Length: 160
Length: 283
Image (cartoon, rainbow over all chains, first blue to last red):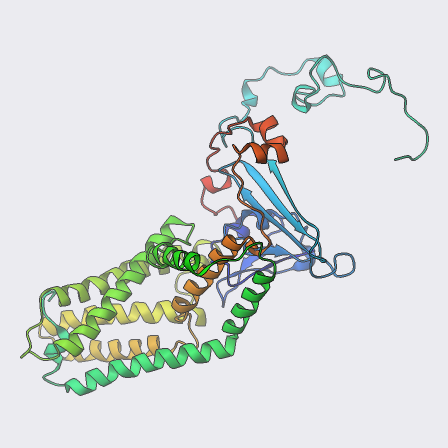
């Protein structure tokens, strides 16, 4: 599902060129507008779609599994710290919106100072937990939640 | 130099009718070029098709009064103050270039039609505005050409590399630069240089107004129309398929998206700039 650019919206600011992890968003030398130079190398990461200040970039679904007519559009509002999606089905009946936080504190104010953190002990190194777990995965109210601690048992087989 | 009308001085060698005819010809070239450009690119057709498509997914009707209000907003924000530019430097450069061009062209037309000879003394303000307009054009234009242009700032190409897409900015810069040179050489009595500057000024302005079909000159007509259409889609709810702008403090929004109050609190703070904190120069 490679990205494409609405030329009438693009003002050639270079935000997508800057953010693309595949380096495939470039500025067209004749039209001075952004374009995807190699759609087959696009990861569909949506970074450029979210970064574009003019919403000039969209993602086109491959026709075999996302028939034309649908729409998945996004608005990343970093000043509010949210991302909003609008998904429209091709029949036009299903039209839904999602809103989620992308930060809980002002940008750049809470960068961990790892150099000031004490080195991990042997016990921490041997543990299966990663740095700052379980704190960072919000499982610190007591201890790790396990099947056993919650009185559950793993069932065999595939089930839903 | 700044107080003298160069066209009145020129009237000694060139008839007024020729100068006035030249202005009319330039206007006709712009009109013709824009129509040809519109037919070739099918931009008007695309624009109306897009507007129809947006209307189909509209959630409410936008009334005539509201449309007038939106047009006023487009005029004030997008047209007069170049509000669509998100990059402050580009916006400033565009404002200088745009207003410089408007002032320069308007002052030229008024001087040629209103005060074409030395017998009709020109008010000091007009030549002053003419020079100021050309100066603003040069300032904004050269700033754009050497530093802000996306080829130089984003693609890392050298400033002397140019393409057909640069026809507009280059002819604009050449027109303003040769106009100032012409005025300077004329005022200082450098006859040969003055004639050469005048010829280059005329040539570059023919390129500017006659090259509409090949350049991006016509953007000054299309951009306001596109900006209005964008505002209409925001007002009628179709929003080009984009999500709404949510007020995070609204209890209804918080009820609909409980992650917002849970993670960000009931009154989320202003988060400032993330990736926008630095210019897009990380290649």
